[in-house]
Image 1 (tube, rainbow, N blue to C red):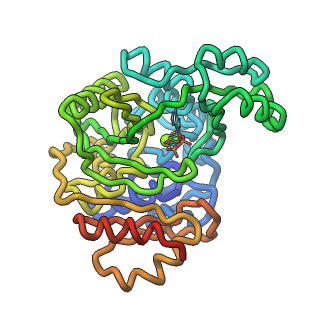
Image 2 (image 1 turned 90 degrees about the horizontal axis):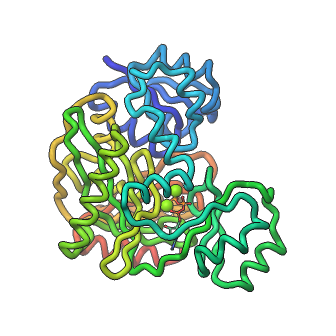
Image 3 (image 1 turned 90 degrees about the vertical axis):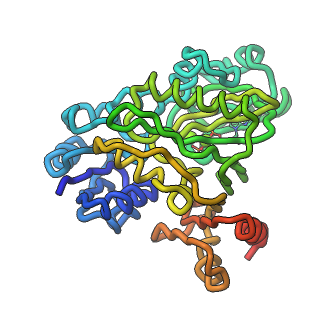
Length: 366
Ligand code: ATP
Ligand code: MG
Ligand code: MG
């Protein structure tokens, strides 16, 4: 059988592997951590860092096609070690999405709406760029951030002064300052192109965050025709401009009838996990199909669905209490160490009754 190589062994790689295996593919995962979540499912693991070129070369020898499960892989190492024909997603997508400034510029240049933003090369210069963006704003490191890491809210001048007084990050760390959008809802959409270039989108999701970390996602979002059309336009424009292969996750803010693109993920996305139970083709199967050159049928959702992330110790509560919820689908990523705020698993439910029950469960502390 053909072999799929996945760079990165986290939960996204795990769910890619869980989609690829029953399709008959062998799966090899490259991750420095022995028995990482994806490696528990894969046929084979290469234990090495993501930028280890000799390990990547080894992966390219074993695998027919290589994909990645997160955007902070080294594009340079991938380009050096992996022949282009084995990396159908290419490196341009990574180049753009690994850097918030490049990403926002790319999106804006396509004529798509983003929050006003400015590059910050040195936090000492922050004051000046603030005037361009205007407070309240959010400062973000250009590279490497996720789950709100590397992000600072700046509601007003006092907060800015306070932030600078306690600044402990190297001053020349490249940053982006974004105007804080007062949004009504956060939405996301997953899009993929298949072997024929057909663009497939999954139902739009409504996302709720806690402490900058995704808490619950529900789909399908109820949308006005105008917003639905705008989101379809955004997804199609990005998929074509990127020559997209694989799944792209698009995070958006909605304020009134204005949609802003927040950020892109060059891979399946946390808010799309409901597709495993609630659609005909999950975002992970869609990703695997796209990178391996298979068609993807039109996406259908069977029932309204909601996903709740299990952060830190939530996983233990879910393990204990799941016996009371026969309708719930638990996904336990099998991470060895429970840390506060760490994504340990998720629960998906379908149907309005269970969605309500899961939301109530999420509000309880246990
Ligand atoms: P992820 O884990 O989704 O990759 P991230 O750390 O890359 O997250 P963002 O998605 O940029 O960070 O921001 C995290 C959250 O912070 C957003 O989902 C949103 O709730 C809030 N946020 C970020 N930027 C803005 C903005 N310009 N205006 C308003 N809220 C924002
Ligand atoms: Mg992000
Ligand atoms: Mg985000």
